[in-house]
Amino acid sequence: MHNKYYCLITGASEGFGKALALECAQRKMNLILVALPGPELYNLASFIRRNYQVDIVAIEKDLSNEENCIALFEEIKALQVKINMLINNAGIGSTMLFSEGTIQLYQKQIKLNIMATTLLTRLFVPALEKNSPSYILNVGSLSCFFFLAKKQVYGATKSYIYFFSKSLRRELSSEGIHVSVICPGSMNTNTSIILLNKTTSWLARQSVMEPKEVARIAIDGLLNRKEVIIPGKVNQCFLLLDKILPSPIKKMITNWQMKKLNSKKYEQIFYSPVLPVEEVISLTA
Amino acid sequence: MKILVTGATGYIGNHLAHTLACMGHQVHALVRSSSSKELLQHQNISIFKGDILDKESLLNAMQGCRQVYHTAAKVGVWAKDLSVFYKVNIEGTLNVLNTALQTGVERSVVTSTCGVIGPSLNEPMSENDPRINGFAIDYELSKKMSEDIVLEYAKKGMNVVLVCPSKVYGPGNVSHTLTTNAIIDKFLKKGIAFIPAPGTYKACFAYIDDIIKGHLLAMEKGNSGEKYILGGFNITYREFFDRIRNISCSVGHIVQLPANIIKGWALLQQLNYKITGTPPYFTIKSTDIFFSNYTFSSDKASRELGYTITPLEDALKKTIQFLNTIHHA
Image (cartoon, rainbow over the protein chains, first blue to last red):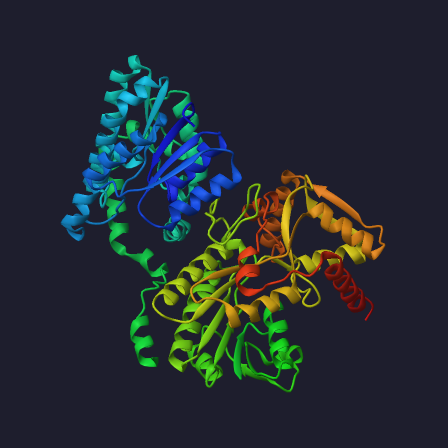
């Protein structure tokens, strides 16, 4: 166990993190999976153990708490395992008007998306240097290139990740640590998002990708030492258009998008399971 | 005991209704059209005309029932309006659960599908394994969302158990073209079966009698809020049809079709739909389901419910015998 290298993935139990874990396992990498407390993490770890011949360590941690980031580092140090890949994937997404979000949400989002990534990177850099060549993958977002309504805080945290990764890359490449940042667009990560993605406009649907596919592109890009990874042709087109379109036209598009967001037409599709179940049960009990 | 069965004209629901009736229970069968009466002829079966999307009719059918088997669902990979999958499978399930709470039903069993768990890698999938691919098919997504609702209700105190049958075959319904029965039937009658190439993809073939027993066992012994895979044998398509060929002494051809051909076939069907209005059997985005392993482990059901699997040979013999009799009728 002591001579093996491990890949550390945060936020590994669901969505894109789960897809990254499966992709890395398929490439025969040993894994340290970190996720919020809950059965999903252990279910994933046991599934990977049964289906791939790799070593798995599963650690429950809420990384939005700074002390937990340090505790995670200590725990891994105590395990005496060698890490040569760090994937900072844990993050909180949100799509809402600024006034709709609570202070607690924004605090948590900034702590997890920015603080945890920064802390863990700082803590693990010495180990990564020792085990070089090694890799750091930070998960940004396509929304760090576009100033989208309802994505103010989220987009800003991802801009931080983008800046941080590109800057750090210049520092660490001489130490044999290769830093990449991936900026994915919409992904089919959970049931309500999948259903929402099925009901959006044709153009928006073309840009939606499966986490599995994005994970493959991510690890390919990381191992090929790409600086910025933009998965998907449609997303690459969006970026190109953004560069060549004159700003008045972009403004028009943004206004149109804003109007659509306000029309709330998509909310009808959700059959919310939030029903007065307790009331009914108390009636029958 | 009075028991409601939704989807009582469907493959599983119909078998279940008859099995319960033969056991001496008073079965309330909820059906959408009265033309399906002949499917439900038994002195212990009372037909209630209605729909799981019509709460009044549901309430009427469920009155006095102590147990509910909710097998009704919109199945398949295609519909003219895809929202019908969500309407029937999500809203329908919500209606059934709410009415069950309202009428004081003691316990319910909801039929889901292994399709929610999705494709497998080397080892058969268990109840808690993570899904490894996306939800391209609306049927699977809508069933996943309805499962989430059932689990949510169970967490809040409702007495309800989930069962997930795999690919079901055996005497009974051959109406839908893509069911295993219909494919076996075609193999016996026309001597040809198309399977995905290479023929080494595995599926979990479950015999209808086992599935019905599994439902009864889940009602009797299942833990509320738990889900149980009701499966069968995990074997390759090739082996499955080879066995059928041997048992039936037929000289049928097993033709392996590569992904591109099946995709092309799907495209032709979609074009045909545009021109003639004939619904496609499968669509391009659903062809991936043919090119993955779908193997499942019934260990949890065996351990906790005493679920058993009929030997493949016996199950196939009975199925072939049945299909041959309706063939000659």
